Length: 264
Ligand SMILES: NC(=O)c1ccc[n+]([C@@H]2O[C@H](COP(=O)([O-])OP(=O)(O)OC[C@H]3O[C@@H](n4cnc5c(N)ncnc54)[C@H](O)[C@@H]3O)[C@@H](O)[C@H]2O)c1
Image (cartoon, rainbow, N blue to C red; front, side):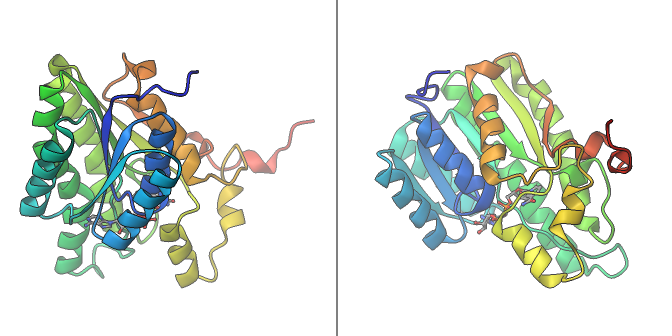
């Protein structure tokens, strides 16, 4: 594999200021892309841009809330003025709300669905014209294993992530003829600030117990998700669209009882 697979490409990464988005921005830098790091937390976005510049890469920070139509429209105008092109769109901005369908407030439903589902649509709505102008490109949606397997007390998050897999398929069908590939990545348990916050609020929950549910008993890091994103962003995946790549140590395909019977 050469190390310049994204030379001359411009990538937008929402939620690029932290966790998985940050790792993807840094991995794209390794492949010589120009990364636009969009985050509502501008300090975090600027910090990642600084990290990229220190590594000799090119980057731009944009502060925006993905659930705001006006802010996303203006973000793409900024990208057009700054770079004149866009080739890769990664939707990583997201948040959790852990409640069930009864305990969830309507305002919390709106917040979660607006960021996790509508935010991705808005990003695609305003980003697709730029990708079409570039003659094609790659959209990567960061979904979750929650899209496939329901987790207790995680109602709105699972609904939003399930919707993202459907969004992925619809966009793949509608824009394939424009040379645009659209794929999801479904991460399992990834060690990021978001996850650490979850475990901080639940002292009874154990990272090791959850890792033991994976056929591959490994800790999965943001860089592992970033490797999948590099694959989907490059021509290595030129015939791949409308699909979901699970980066979950096999947890989604397992019944969960593999760990009781060890190999001889
Ligand atoms: N960490 C995991 O285990 C895991 C597993 C599956 C899926 N995911 C998904 O991966 C994505 C990234 O998660 P992470 O773990 O890196 O989280 P993170 O909290 O480390 O990073 C999320 C980033 O998104 C930004 N953000 C949040 N809301 C925003 C908004 N409205 N507009 C713009 N930016 C916003 C935050 O400021 C933050 O920088 C999320 O979509 C999450 O659902 C994470």
